[in-house]
Image (cartoon, rainbow, N blue to C red; front, side, top):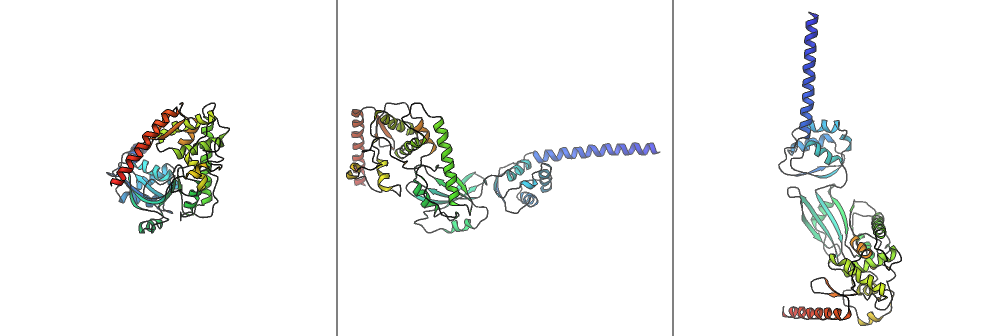
Length: 387
């Protein structure tokens, strides 16, 4: 009898092991298989939330088949305590394992509302936009000039939301004075800041959070520029007529201000490098303008002949070589072009009417290009008068 009982118990135990094992295999497969979402969604994880509330939210939105199974999977993979607040894009058919990875990975939020403070060469604007999870594209909600326009209600609304993300975007060629002036109007940042050295800020897009220090943001921009300049200097072309990274930054800033077409940077850089090698004056208008404005805003008019003749440290029609400092904050591409210019014999260039330039090796060629440009200017003037 006891032998029969023992045999039945052993059989029951074996069946139980198989059932549990099968259940684990099923649960693991369910946790890792494609989920039921037919369209991507934006999942908000509020500060102070937990995996239990997130899993219930996901179940309500039809993103997972079982809130319990998602919690168990997060526990089993030791990710429950790694939940990060933010707004996250959950793609269609995302598995539970993928969703848990998304909400615990950290880093910037991937969807929701975003405010971008754009600092441009000629203007600044604040852009409010939201990601449409079904298309993966940002849709503009509001745009305004903080110096001239009334603050729209859309901006006030998103400023009060806890999951709104913020970025400060610097355009290539802005001056340090412009950056500081515009940062003072960014109302999510705090603290005063002095105008840093010209050229020391890396144009880029920087994630910020309410309460961040303006000085800390400037420090991030400077560290980024130091890294870019150091890497470019280490990989520079041989025999450049530059004494060090500081002069490279000056040259890069001139290239940045002279370039309307990004692809032309290496050619524009080659003109200035060739002029430096031959002992020719650089004769570039942006340096003259910087000497007039000191980087504080846009000149807003043409350069006068008296200003072209005036001896200033930045008048490259008068001085030899490079000006004493950069004239703007150049981007990575301009820095790399200055340190790896195209191999040309160009020493002249002039606008060609398309936004780019016509390059020349000789003065005769240059004069022909100038004559064509003058003709284009005259024709454009006639068209303006006709309109």
